[in-house]
Image 1 (cartoon, rainbow, N blue to C red):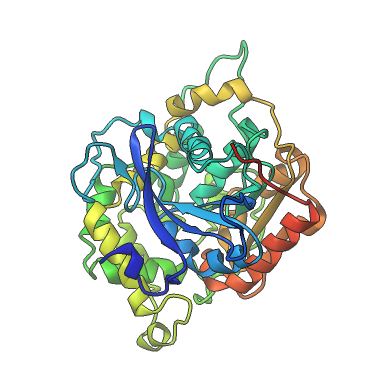
Image 2: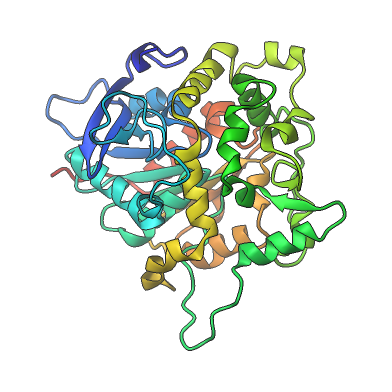
Length: 398
């Protein structure tokens, strides 16, 4: 299926690819109808998370372009129709044994800086990131405030770069290693989803889901949405620890012997819930299923592997203590556990990491869960446009 004929994708949204660094980057783009030929309207970059695609922004791209913005959503490295240069077909499947260096955060940030320049711009009015895209967007704004005039962080709090140890002895174990041991010692034994996503088995588990790939994705999207009534998030007590994380839903802190398809299957949607789902009807779910059937999940999982292995974030320590100085907004669903999945993260983002996040720009949208740009697109567009206009954010072309 051509991306130009994907169901739910307005015909005004264009699909194309750009040669950037070592990649052929697939983008979806929407331009303002009234923009004169050769004009450079303000640029918005939208960065998806896992397991998503540029397609995840389909419901908000056209309304944002109608508000006067040039809106660009790439398939990030390892996802969808973005592929390594020289790959002869759209089939570009990463493996567990591939080099992880291209998936470290500094590399992903360079991808987005390069995208801005490849589009003929020197600056972007905003970089907007959802889920794992929030971390990429946060690093873009922190490292290159001259390029990214503002940042919108969605569904995952951004807490900055790793701290310097100076003359301290490095800990014998990483935080994730310590948490994994603590969770495994609980009764019943548990494991964190980021640890699971870092294992060799995770991709095969999901590709070979007993319920089928499409039904696995259906259940995964369901349990993290406002449709699953078990989502009633609250601030977890204490610091980050095995005991505090054990209070999260099973899709975050899994039973130790289960796969992700097994975990989400127990709380999957009923036939009635599937039939009445307005934000992800069957034909739109089929786009995700077809794309992941073609590429696998390993490209996206490689980023989790970098996040759980400290060696891949060592280069970020040069920015230790640096804050995001450009205007920042946090936007999430009120039924999204991603806001509180790490105790203290949202508070650190608001009080330390972001120097310019106003009270009114920490937004939790009622009756929406983790997939907020699909579940509540009208609210997302409203808050984005309000934020951008209040700060009079523009772009500079090259």
